[in-house]
Image 1 (cartoon, helix red, strand yellow):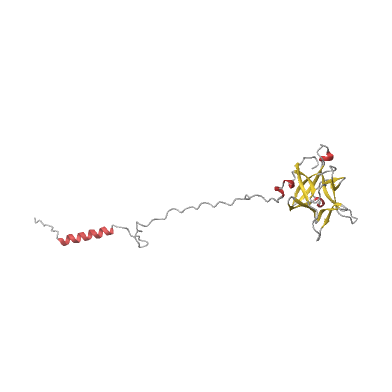
Image 2 (cartoon, rainbow, N blue to C red; image 1 turned 135 degrees about the vertical axis):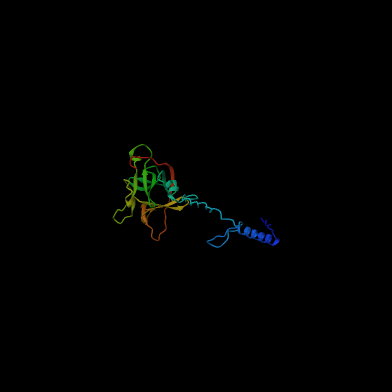
Length: 227
């Protein structure tokens, strides 16, 4: 038998080494068959999970700041919860009274001189009048201001009547004129003092407002069967 020696020549070794290098390169990063592009570089940083923005806080529905000082609800004497005396600013000694069923000015303690302006909505008020506190219905049941038109060409006046907020003649407007003074009106007629006729209601037209009134707090309003 003839023995054959395999002689590895340098050329063959180089060819083999070249093949190994080629194989090593081919065993590297795989090629994306669909796109023909290689795998992205390892240095590419994948984007992280989307950051969820913090929910926006809805603005508070509560009002900020102090309530207006002119609001009826913020003015105790117009809250319907306080009894007041009413004094004409231009008068030095007299006070308003529901005396004998008619609104007048007096300089003594006669008649009903305690009043409760009670809001009815829309800036209107019932003005309830009371007598002194003596636990008697004649004093503790209210009589409300009501406009009286005499129908004979005479001026409008204010009388006492059973309280009824539905009656326009009992719906008065009380408007601040500053420095604790108020104008009192019904429709377009203002409560004014006439030297010859006393307290009347009149439309001013171009005439100035001559009479304004102070509402002097006299404590909590009483609770009565009638009002």
